[in-house]
Amino acid sequence: MAETFSTLEKNILKAKGLSDSQLDSLIASGIGSKQDFQTVGDASTLCQLVSGIDSPTAHAVMNWATGQPAAAAVPATAQAPQVIIDTADVIHCVHCGAKQPKDYKSGDLCTSCGKQAEPVFACYWCASAGPGKFCRQCGAEFLPTADLDLGILLKHDGLPKDIIPERLRAMSTAEKDVLWGRVRKLRG
Image 1 (cartoon, rainbow, N blue to C red):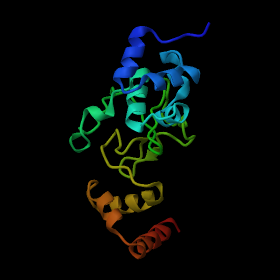
Image 2: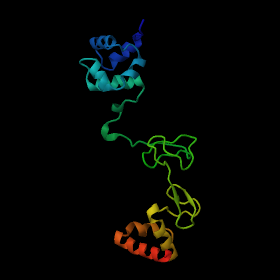
Image 3: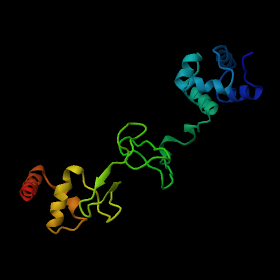
Image 4: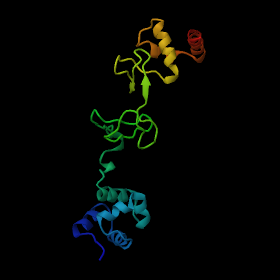
């Protein structure tokens, strides 16, 4: 025999806004327990299965059945910003933001998008390499790989390490081409 809602569950569904006929229609469509709502998936599918159910009621029923917090509990104008607290060892992909597994090692590919989750950059200041936005050896901000040689040139010109990334971001393509000419001359 198929599972059916307990008396308490039926009363909860009625409290969420379902009428007796909608409850009968729900059971007739094959939904007889809270676990069946997992198969339904979302409120719009529930609206399609049960005739006459409105969207707010469908959302209330699905939130109760799936254990999701009710979005209507906080007015839209007063919603608090979402805060996510992670431990210090959590790594998120720089491309898609997906959380990486616990056995993640620097340089591994993202399990979600397949790109390098945390690219390894070379430091223009101390020549070490590592992931992240800043060098773990000297604290210099990593430059895009295309600007690495320009950063090294500006270091040899005597610019401080905290000024070099700002200067390169502010440079136009023509100004960078002039620096590239100097780099080629030094290599030649």
